[in-house]
Amino acid sequence: MNVAQPIEWTDKGVVMLDQRRLPGEVIRHTYADYRDVAAAIKDMVIRGAPAIGVAAAMGVALGVERSKARTLEELRAEFLSICQTIAGTRPTAVDLFWAVERMSRSFEQLAAANTPLDALRRAMVEEARAIHAEKKAIDEAIGCFGAELMPATGQVMTQCNAGALATAGIGTALGVIRVAVEQGHKLRVLVPETRPYLQGARLTAWELREGGIPLTLITDNMVGHFMKTGSVAAVVVGADRIAANGDTANKIGTYQIAVLAHEHGVPFYVAAPVSTFDLTISSGEQIPIEERSADEVTHLCGVRIAPDVTVANPAFDVTPARLVSAIICERGVARAPYVESLRRLAGSK
Ligand code: MRU
Image 1 (tube, rainbow, N blue to C red):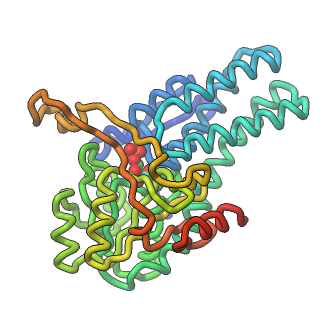
Image 2 (image 1 turned 90 degrees about the vertical axis):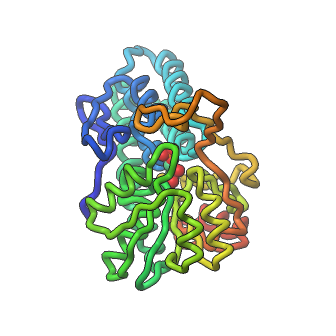
């Protein structure tokens, strides 16, 4: 499947497709310093929970690879500071912390085995590349499980961008749609623009058009109308963090889509890897919600569209589990009660 590559590891450093410039320009940046990788995550050069996880792992690996430390103790001190910098970029997507934790486990295992520093540096790079490679297989599996839930024909709504740009694979929500279309489902995707950052209009519309998947772009306030007129057969969205009870944080606007889907009897599916489960928290109330800059609301493509007033800009909202018809991950499909089904899938391999 031919999809966009948001991130790559190269000898020169971490290469990222600049998602802030899409769809107008397709440009890439090479980062040779982990602090620049952290800034790129914060500034949305790369975004989407699983892709942020890959970027975090590569950022940590880059920091270790380029470190001038000459002893394990020096390297460990630097490593902790690298992890802290990367972990401090965006608070909601748990994949970021999952990736940092996995890199930390790997570091400590290598250290415990008295691995020489050069070999340790190489192994950390390999671990980051392994995380990247795994994402591709994970998305394919999510796509296969999810395709079975897609209608044979009709319109499917999504939110934000949960495609290749967001995962470094084929996408989670868009991966489900891609696989279904490949299997012969006749689907059209209804794409809400996803204000304020316009991931729907800029990224999902671009990705679907590049992939030859039919779509209709709508503004966010048209969702109710299309639900009511019966032209939505299903909703499938990604996730940034799923609590143990199935409450799901995703891009702002997801909750209102879920409420409308419930009102109109439309199934509402969440597609996400196990790395997006956060079983350490019992409900969505404990999910930290990132508050982003007021400029994203008062400005559109750099042009002021509102006076200088008080602005709220929560980047995510939480959809309660009771509105979620199923959660599709790489190990299968979880249904309510999620406390049991998510625990079972997280524990299985
Ligand atoms: O702020 P973003 O663009 O990083 O938010 C992305 C989303 O909310 C996605 O829907 C989510 O991360 C899932 S991506 C497979």
